[in-house]
Length: 174
Image (cartoon, rainbow, N blue to C red; front, side):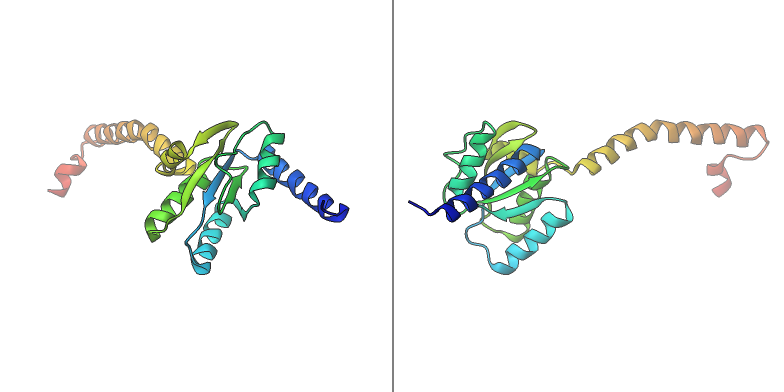
C-alpha cells in the first residue's frame, strides 16, 4: 500500500487532470511512441503557439480524472499517451497532431478524445484534423459575404464614370 504522501500527490494530479478535462473545449489523447526529442519539442511549440496544453499523462490517473467527469476511456488509455487540451479552438489539438504527423511522416496517432462534451473516436478526430482553423473558416465566410458587395461597388463605380462622361475603366486601359 502506498504511503500517505504518495497517495496525496496522486490525488492532487487526478484533481488537476479532472479540472483540465472539465474546463476544456477539447481534449485529445495522442500516442506519441516513435518520435524523437527534437520532434516532440517542435510539436510542443506548435501546441503552445495555438494555446493548447500538451503533456504526457499517466493512464491510470487520467482514467480516474475522466471518470470523475463522466467519461470512459478504458480502451483508449493504454500504452504511451499524451493529452492535448485547450479552452480555445476545439479542433486545434486534432488539427495540429494530424498536420504535424503528415508533414513529418511520423507515427503520431490520435487515440480518441472529447470535443465540447462529446466523446469522439480517433477516426472522427482525424476528420477534424483535415479542417482549417476556426479563424480560416471565419475569414472564408466573411469573404463570401464581401464578394457581392465588392461587385456591386465596382458596377456602381462604372455607372458613375459613364455618367460623368468618362470612358469605363476597361476601355480606358485599351
